[in-house]
Length: 419
Image 1 (cartoon, rainbow, N blue to C red):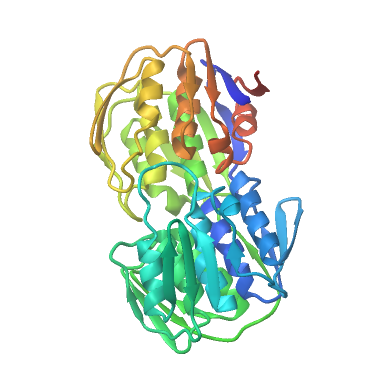
Image 2: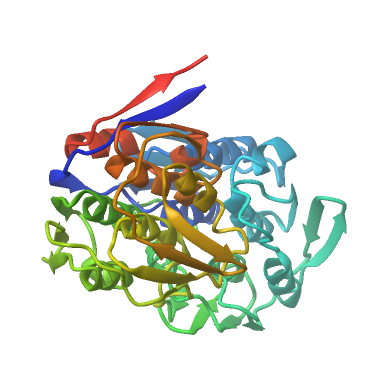
């Protein structure tokens, strides 16, 4: 079993470049099925979720290769429309392949997705959208089967602005007859990135970043290249790490506007945050204080994925910070592990109250999900002594060498194997 071993107390300093966005590259990899040619995806992070997506594409008949920071996908020949359970369970966002496989093959068979246990993430919105576009769907236990002799563009209204359901609808709609209008669509930057990729292929997609996205079906094939946007959640994590340690770091290769919710929170804590064209600097050398309530909401609200790292930054802040989680039911699983380090956290339902403490002490802790696991690493950076973090396979799903990046900034962190 691999663990992170962190010897806390080091102040982070220096510069680091942020990886490509996990939540962009995965839907774009699914969308490559619609290219019917070769797609080269640049700025592709090395993540276990990316590896899982490569396995799915290979199973479907695509040729896939990685060259440095790029992934090359040849989808000219797709020979299967089914994704077996063992591949679906490797990542929670595997359902994103549903719309693309259905659009490409006219049918899709897969099981319910796996990944982090953050509470129910029903696929009903995805399936309802496919039905509106003309798919016949049957469910047998954990298996989903979709078929459509003909897909037709229609108005699809999402009950909730789900990122995954918006993306799945976009991917299916590009191969529909006529126009599809998605209302109450998610507005996250990753939606815009997917639209940008589809536009490079020649599909007509407009409105990403607004609550209404219009997709006109087309028959497109060809080769293209696309560079994935920076990962705003990874960036927020490193900024929070600097806040935890009273550090002074600069992140390059970022889009500062995508980080506004996180940087506003860190500024409210007393950190000095400044941004350039594609960089952000944080100087957290002053006294950290509690901040206004953090309430997670769909973009442009505070992102649920940034909540655990920002919570870590509040563990030693003066005063009490209130967190309200509106997206996932089980997003506070990391708080019990933080308490093992000496954190003062009280939770009730969707609310967590974090009161800053003077000292944290190293202890063995367990990562149970991606962002919660990263927040435990951040807490360990400021704890006295050694903290050993197990369950780091969850962290590998979304961070390209988290330990290496933190070590380059001065953290005493290593990845080791234990019995």
